[in-house]
Image 1 (tube, one colour):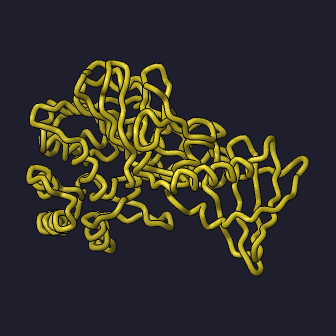
Image 2 (cartoon, rainbow, N blue to C red):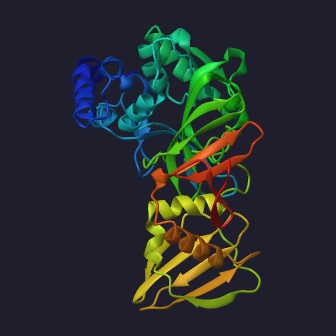
Image 3 (tube, helix red, strand yellow):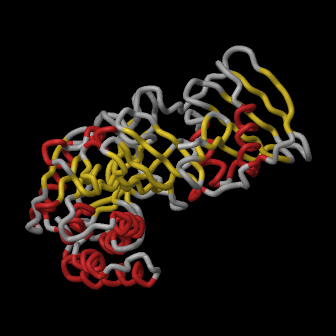
Length: 392
């Protein structure tokens, strides 16, 4: 149950948040603006987790003001956590997305009044409510992996008189029973476009999703170009959504995909490098590394003596530790393969291409599962450790 504070004051707070997004140039469509003004976000987020893991309850008078102020701020709010199997740690498994990011993605959908939309990841139901406000509930289908989240979202939507088609299941398979869709919006991250998403689009269909590797995140807008193909650009806007995953009981994408502990068993090799490691923070390079070395995890960096220690690893337990010096740095590597040479090759290729940002990359994805990444134009493919032009 929400507090009396919310019942009495949410309209003004929703209007203020909407005005903030409009002033920033994010909410430029009056119909989406009306949806944000008139949809009570607090109804869908009766509680959330702080960064330290403690819970803020709207029903608790001691935290009600903090809760309401935060709900109507431009923040992403974690609403569900789950333990990692075999590790003393919890990870977030569901959230209410930052409103500004929601607004950007809804704008990118480019809907019209007749558009039929499939949302991947119902979560709290707030985004589904925005879609229903704009299009009508009969044109909205949403799928959620976790049964409890789906049931709660359905209750909250129904309390507003909204009854879109809600399905419990793995979003990678879409919802064929309600297909085809003119638009597909994924409020989760994928490393590749599931073939079912492409198959369930109409000929004028569009996908808006967070296309992620462990190194990089970019919103992607992909349009249907043939019955079996979508194509479009990555944007310079990250999404950082939680991964689409098949198991509601685990926060992991797949067993073993997340290495929280790296084992440094076996033989190690040591060498030197003169690469300026600060380049690893460049979003454009990280996007390229995510394409060329998708198993590479986000590097960590910590102060060490007079320099820094960087650590990189992959899901197959290959790793590299780099201790920086004045001009040369010491690289120690171990595991099944040596990953630092691949990083150096990617950096050299990125410089050769003119240090492109994330927004210069694009993707062609097909229902047979193949993906072609390209730079600037679909006939300039990024393959292996080189970018080549085709005659297509």
